[in-house]
Length: 308
Image 1 (cartoon, rainbow, N blue to C red):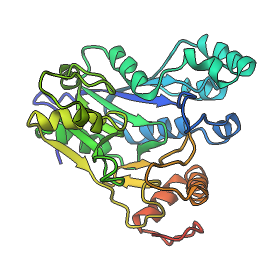
Image 2: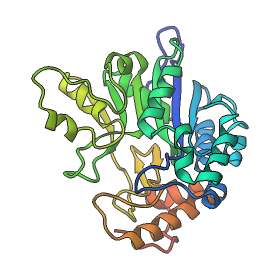
Image 3: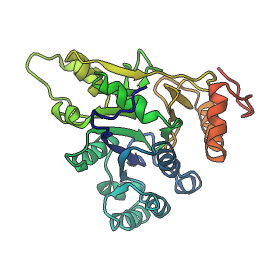
C-alpha cells in the first residue's frame, strides 16, 4: 500500500476534527456528568489517534460542548490537540447548567454540524486533508490514515465510514465518524456539514432527503458532481447490534450513541439498545483491543451478548 507521501517524500498535513459532547437539544438528550467522568470517550478517542498515527503530520481540533472540567483536563494532556471554545467558556457553561438547567447552557454550545463547520474554518491553509471523527469513534489499526488518505490520493473525493445500516430509511453515505476529504475539496463545495446550497431547478424534497444526518449531503453532492467515493464498509465478523459496535474497513471503530441515549430511528427496543450499549462501553474502556478482537471474530465472545 502507498504511504500517502508525495514525490518528495512529504506526507500530507492532516487536520482531525472531533466534536466532544452533543448539545442539549432534542430527544437524544445530554450526556450525564457521572457517565462522562467514568467513560470519557474523548480521552479514548485521542489516545487511539495518538497510538495509531505515528509518523503522520497531523493536528487534532476539538470543539467541546461538554463543559466537563475532567474532559478539558484530559484533552490538554495530549500533544497535537487544540480545543475550542476558550477555557473560560467551560466554567461559565457549567454554572449556566447548574443555575438554569440544560437550556441555560445552549448559547455556549454548537450542534454537531455547526461545530464541525466552526472547526473547519480553524484549519490553516497549509493543511491538505480534513478528517472527522466522533468522540466515540477511533482508529483500531496503525495504517488507518494510509487507508483513508490513499483512497483520496487514488482519486476518491471522500473516503470513510459507510453508514448503510439504516437504509432505506436513511440514505447510505460516508459518515463523519470517520470521513476524509481534501480541505480544498470540502471548501469548494461552498456548503457546510448541514446546509445545502439550493440551485435553480433543484427539487427541494430531494435536498431534504439527503440531509438526514450530519455531513450526509457531502456524499451526495460529490456523487451528483460525478465524483468517486471510497466507502469503508462494516467489516465485523461478530455483530451484537445492527449499528452499535461497528468496525469499518477493519480500521475504524464506532460505538454509536456513546455520549447520548441509545435511540435509533429504525430500532424501537430501547431496553435492548441500552443493555448492548452499556456492555460494549464497559468492554471498550476495560480493554479496547480485546473488544475489537471479539468483533473481528479473532477471540471467543465472552461479553455476555448474543450475536445477531
